[in-house]
Length: 79
Image 1 (tube, rainbow, N blue to C red):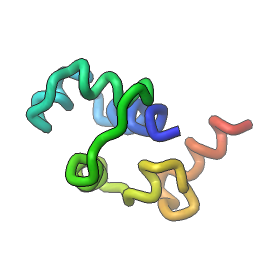
Image 2 (cartoon, one colour):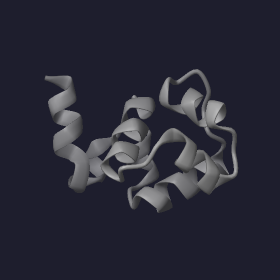
Image 3 (cartoon, rainbow, N blue to C red):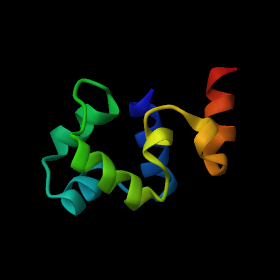
C-alpha cells in the first residue's frame, strides 16, 4: 500500500517523519497518517512527494511495474 511505500522511501533517505513534514510544511501527524493510510495526500502533495522521492505517482500508489528502481522492494514485500 502507499503508506508502506512512503515509509520505505523516507527511511531510504534517512529522514524522520518530522523532517518530511517540515519539508512539506505539514504537521508530523498528517504525514504519519499518510504512512498508516489513515489519510491520503491530496493531488498536489502526491506530486510533490513523487518529485521529492524521484518516483512516479503510479509507484507511490502501489503500481511498481511503473518504477523499476524500487520494484524489487515491493515484490519482496508481497512474498
